[in-house]
Image 1 (tube, rainbow, N blue to C red):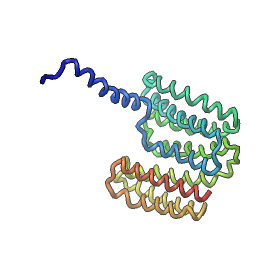
Image 2: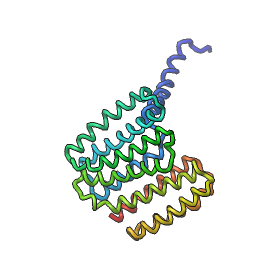
Image 3: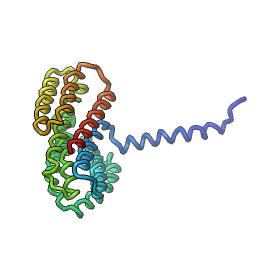
Image 4: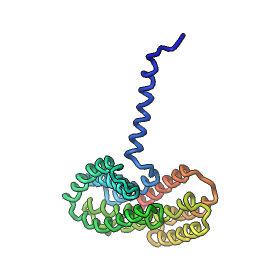
Length: 259
């Protein structure tokens, strides 16, 4: 039997919907899969240390929307074509601003961290303008921004920032090491200088973490072994990311047990 001529449009319409949906996702969500662990870990650690509070919900929303807003701001700076990203900038600004305002109204002390974030975001903007956003210093500026969130979480909860200093140091030690290690696996694969930097850093981090709390020694020893052995293996970026998610979970569990 011959196919009915009118059947084709009916079958093509559903097929087009997933394509349009994927296009919308790609338009409004950056392809920065590795960034999500760096965004989530400090927040979750902060909540685990100080305890859950209702104000942490708008803070979390402001944090995620603020990250997405900053990503498209830097894309606009890098491309010199801000109109291209106008829709994303409006969407995430309209989400981030009222949520951040709610946090500041309830806890004005959260503004203490604004100058530090302004300086670090200026570093990101400068590297975006120079189109060198993969530079090591730029990555480290992003890591410090993420780790400072632990203090913001504590302030939003009405807890003294001093209480979360050990957690801040531990997460900072881990994420800085992750930046060095991931570069040896992907963008700086085969670089003897980066490999030496990564291994040396992880040795120092192991000592520092052990001095901070001896219970941190096992996980930081695992991180050192990972930084030493895995760069010699050819792993796909997805595999590298999966390993880092696993390591992030281990770091989180360790800090929860310690706290």
